[in-house]
Image (tube, rainbow, N blue to C red):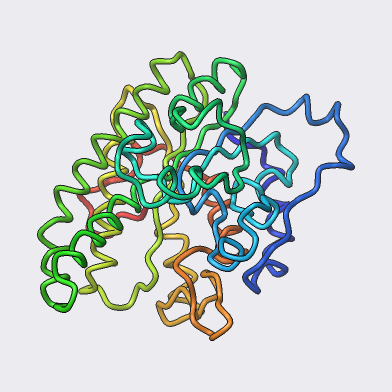
Length: 314
């Protein structure tokens, strides 16, 4: 069962107010408790994007969870009982096993006791373990979304920079050479995650959220090609019949707006978090999160996406 259609209406009215980059955390204090009980839960999983990370509050106010508002919190405005277990810096490997390399979740964020939207049982509990425990405790959960894998590419990038600190050309070649293996491992990990969720007995809607590019005008850009390759792999995994997963088209949703309002530049289109110097961080702005929220609530069956078509949209 899909998330309630009221989400789309709620978010439509919020788009203009979110365009500036920052949004305040929703407050459910005045919501009718009986109404909330009638709605089935939504569980969001993943990395810094669904977590709602922004680089300013991460430095100035990392203990204040209200400073970190991702698209799951916007979906919760509907209102839908929303649990956001995402963690900044989570990789697909550390999602499964906390000892696996990550880009800051366990090695930094959780280690320092910084804010999370949920409480994990212990530092040793992985996000996958949390998800399986949550679904066991909430068997009527309507939707589970997962957005994971970008930090796998960032780990590759970090390794390439460490290997060639003063040679940009060598760094780029390292990324080109290493991306297929990194994406392949990510796909394997995501398949394991989706399989574990289905094997737990969960039969509700399972949504894989694709990543956006920072720009859509230079098709030769290594970053765009890497994200496209990652997204394509995520769709392929989601199309495994046993997973019965849907796709939230984050890549194409950002791309359409970036091309229409920013000449292909996601920053110029207001989709990315704007910094004080006028440049943008790689994380979504409030407007960007609204776009992703609409993509999640409008997710389509993965099986309907034809990856043999060069114009396939995901």
